[in-house]
Image 1: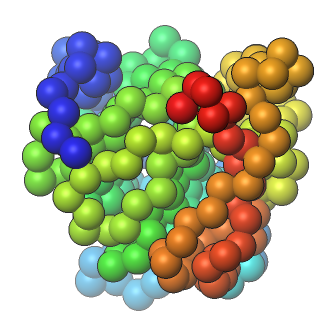
Image 2: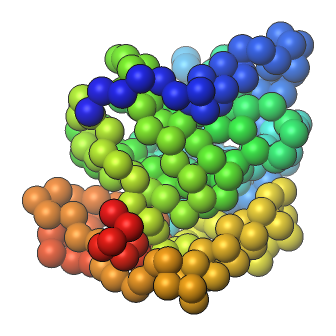
Image 3: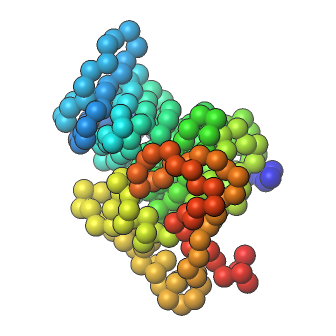
Length: 267
């Protein structure tokens, strides 16, 4: 579905280029590893992989790769927080506050009033400012993008004429290589925040903790008021996907996702 770029998307995508060059360069040129669980490696070109350790500084161009049942957390100088799930790979290139998710699952949280960021996969890019998102990406497979709090713009790398704006509690699931971005669905924040290994409803180490709580409370009020109703969201004929809660490949044909559907009258 081709759409014209909205003012919101232009604001989100262009904010990065409107910031002073010194700000853009300084804040995403280095990240510190703050948590490591199980097998996590630091990868650099022309160097042997080495074990990641808390306190290790990551500079461009470097990658973090996690093994099965492994997780890693990194913080940037502006307190932007990144967490990687199992079987994931993230690359820091030092390019205009852009982070590359090469494979797997990532949580990215950009603090309020700290400029914007982009998360890039091979097919799509998300632009966000003061926002918390979860992303799953697998080359040739499924892309899943969830906004926990705030707002984000998702657009195709080949053409920014194809885009979608997602608000708190919304998710998009699509195939890698799709030429359209489907409309967002409502995701059950209560169940997601309870089951996820990358984000929590009550975690003081998360810079946007208050905003996460606010988004959760807003959704709960909408459910109480009848604006959202309990329901299951099915993804027919989509094959393999990766669950936010366990980061392992799972056949989800005819299996329910953790989502709530709006009332039929509001679709």
